[in-house]
Image 1: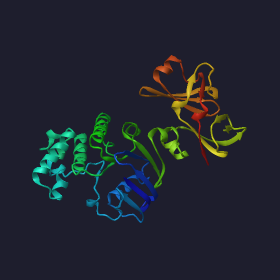
Image 2: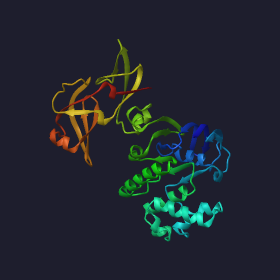
Image 3: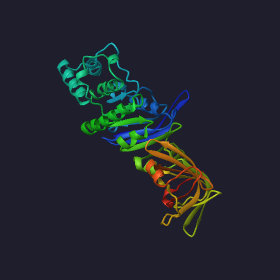
Image 4: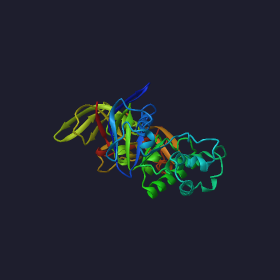
Length: 349
């Protein structure tokens, strides 16, 4: 439905570098990446705010690279809402329709219908300054949706909200997407958004898309060292990979790992903390990688605890607080850790 090919653009310290992207009709697509990766520039270039220096943008098979923003059928919602403070919520939502010179009765009907869908029908007579952040964000989304865009672009739509409001609006976005079938491209820094909303995810680094896939593919099978570190793999080490008789080992100096890879030579390896199993007793299991060491750190984080075991290298595991208590784990105590060969992700250096 949306096809971006070799898109390049430089704006001061921000840039896009030959970006390729394909989004399917009706998909909820999330773009993830650190500040400065080029995420907002990509959205604004798709919307037509910027003209690329190279590359093309196609929507439904039509080249829209140089089409005016108002003629693209694309709606965009920013993190800071950008509502007109002197207009009522009804006037804000209907602004684009009035610009299109739509019939006033139709404007009233569409505004009412869209506001009700977002749970703000009772706020239409209010002005933005009298609304909460969550209500203002709903109004901004309604203003974009009322135009029935082919694609809805969301630039960090939940970042300025408190955790409770963010969770509620996340559920509403999922419901809206299911109800309308609108294709959504959503920028975020929150991993919770990805697992709650995304059909697919793209990770950006330095103006490039470095991996695209389902949330599970990106988080469990990162394609690069950067993606592994950015998505919270934590256990990231450098070593040498050797393959002998079909078996791969990674020499990390202090310990040697067994894994499943065809990559040889200098490598980076990553192991997600949730793949690491901890015990007070030595393991008797089919998992190939088993080590013993000393607990050097236990850090509480809500219902989970982050555990660091020094087994020659500091290996991080994530356990529930109940598991830490049940195992009677404490800093300075001995512990055993294990993880499968398939949990060791290998990236060439």
